[in-house]
Image (cartoon, rainbow, N blue to C red):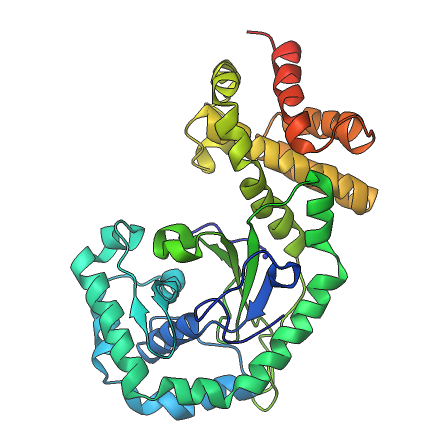
Length: 353
């Protein structure tokens, strides 16, 4: 359903309380209790891909298997087609273990199952949490969650991805990254849009990633791979960094509306329906490509550029070169905010109406 993406640890993380603006809190890596709760319920309902073999998945089934007739399980069984990423509803919950539920005003899931059904399901999942003593199970596995989280975070930090992004922009942003490790997820990594699920977490870029070893041992713990997080950190993070710039230069951006390649297959496939959205994506992808050119091999850079061209982001090649030559390789501008209007001038000059 959603486009898949191939994205210190304090386990009682922001759902209980987050500090503001500290560097060490820019990145969280942990097992999210809400995601885990909803995943287990869908597994019991046979409405979720079976997890890959591990000691943890074995323990989950042994502990929760007797609750297959719980009303929450029966409720999700009653839904017609059930998608794997429905478990993102776990982000509607906060303040574990004394759960508070945020009821989204609008949600794509309402179109599939009806608003009343989704909200009822949320409440039944809270009941499941209490009835099964989920928090006791979760706390019992705390040390293992911490180990998995710390191992993955060390790999992410080793690439200094966040520092490199901040060094590019040369100003700070409220963006923070949350990598949600999901030991029962065998089907794919994906981004979670917290803005609509629960606005109190809207400043988090959330990425859910699972355990993908098909032939894993039922007696061993899952291992979480460090893969493609650079694109997640740099791409999704850049959307947050440039949001204020797009608001500031709305008039100048609108004046370039004639550049929108709306009939291209890639634009339609990516549901890009207007020029502002198109430019935003071209801009972000150009910045990521420029960072690839600076920090990755030439081959990796060329692969990145080829993907963007194949997807009809037709301004990326030009903007990547312009950003590299006129911003990254010079000290003329204080920060990217000062440089941003030059990009708009460049587009108007190179592609006149």
